[in-house]
Image 1: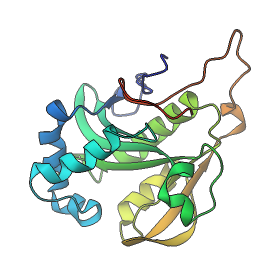
Image 2: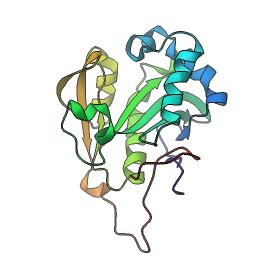
Image 3: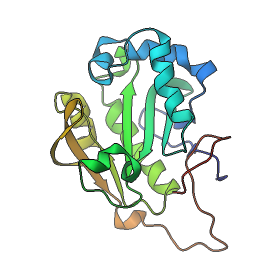
Length: 210
């Protein structure tokens, strides 16, 4: 994996092959903005409105230092979900919960109503968690903080092997702190040759070492 590439390996899931693709504003904004205006999504993301609202949210990440990477989730060749993979230890979340160096957080939404409520979230969370742990050898935990009112999201994380560590008050919401520890079998092996630092970023940007 090149230093400026995200974890784009295609992984199998029960619903078909899945991969993460870095967001490109000119290509992806109309689709992501449409998803953000779906009532089930808007209730928790609070980015409903004209495309500029979502565009500002995406540009803030794309113009940053790589600590948060916005991606489309592509299942069997079809973009159907939006993901943010972020360094939890460098995020405002660290002001509210104990974090470890290189903890990685996930935000996600399933775009269309037809893809919700049939277990896809659980399957995709398993896949993305595996991608993150493979790409970030120094990451020992994957975290998430869904709104406690978002019962389907909490259930998806639980089904994907996360545990509910507790609930925490964050700006704008009360969140369920979900934690997935790296399993012993997932610990990286010592490199056979010179070790390159893995990175998860968008090409053309300064990145945070992972």
